[in-house]
Image 1 (cartoon, rainbow, N blue to C red):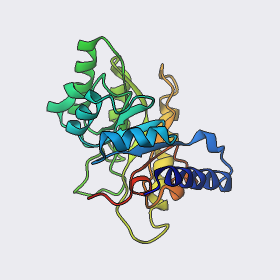
Image 2: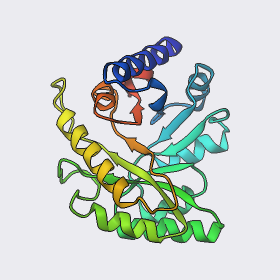
Image 3: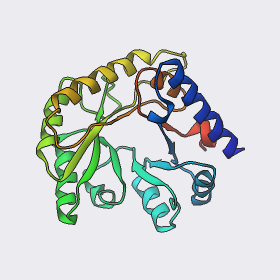
Image 4: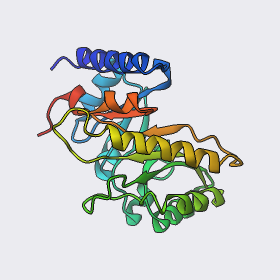
Length: 230
C-alpha cells in the first residue's frame, strides 16, 4: 500500500469534483477514517499529509490518544456513541459527528458542563430511513436542532449522514442532495444562532465525489486511503 499516493489521489479527486461543481476545493475537508488502523499507520497518514482523523470506536480512540498517535492532526468521533461512553469522548475530540437523539445530546451537554467546555457537535440524520442505522429523522431534525441551540454547553456545527450502501455509481446523489437541502434549511432557521453552522459531513470511499458534487464540506474516507479493512 502506497499511503502517500492514495492520499494524493483522494485529494485530487475531491479537488476535481469540487471544480466540476463550481466549488472551491479548499472548502472541502478530507477526514481519514482510521477505524481498525494501527497507531503507526495513523502516524504515517499524518506524515503523508492527513490533518484530520476520525474514529468510530471509543476503545480505539482512547488507545490512539494514549499512544499520541494523532500528533499533528485534529481528531473527530464519527461512530455511534452510546451515552455510557460520552465521558470518554467529550473534550477529547474537537467534533462529534453522531449526535442523534435528545438523550445523547443532553448527555454530551452534561459532560461538557462538568468539564467547563463547549463541545462541537453535528446532528446525524437517517436520511434514507434505514432501521439498521442511527440518526434522527428529517422530520424530527428541526426540534433536535432547536434543543441543541438552547444548550450553551454544545456548539451545533452542522449535519452528518450515512446513506445506504450501494454498488451502483451515483445512486446516493439523491440522498446527498436531500441532505444539502436540509443543511441549508436548518442553517437558515439557526440564523440567530451564536455559532456558525459550517459542516455538512457526508460521503465515504465509494461515493465521496458525488457527495462533493452535492455540497459536502467534509468527506470521511477510509478504504480508499488505507485499503480494505480486515
